[in-house]
Image (cartoon, rainbow, N blue to C red; front, side):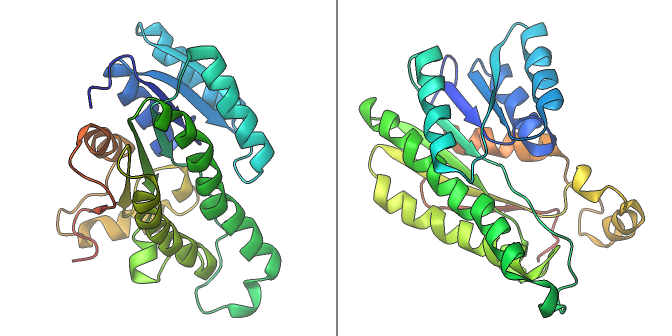
Length: 246
């Protein structure tokens, strides 16, 4: 799929991997809707960066965990740009809880994480795919995590939510075929604001990786674009982690 003039929605598009993906898509000629929930300033800065470089983008607010807001967001993007062709399901959240502290994994934590990380991705895919099917083509990339493969991560509920995202990818690939392709990019440790306050841990981890460096948001963005462009691939879980899980 050629990305030029395609309409792309990037959830959580103002920071980290989402920002890098928004910019990479715009560099390939896509029209980008940069979604945010709380990071309005960052989303608007991402849009400004795209526009300053000759691209076309807008910032759009929606809490992906709320289906009504997702539906309104998709309708707004379609009204503004005429269609929606690409979805990058990037918005995620976590709580930093020791993996063995089961008591801290409260019902509230489980609900909050799953509402955003799993149900939110489903809501966005469901709403966007309706318009993709009208065009007889479309592509979705979900952002997973090696936490969903290893069971380790910022918290037990987070790791389980990302395992669910990997499963959601395969189910959506079946449900939306043949016109909408759905794949999942699975990053390892990435140098983003999620590491804020844990920089020393990050610096200790990097030399232990086979490639001895953490992935950057731009590394992940390049693979996201490649997955969107590859028309013979769906239902795949693609890991990019500098050898962390080998």
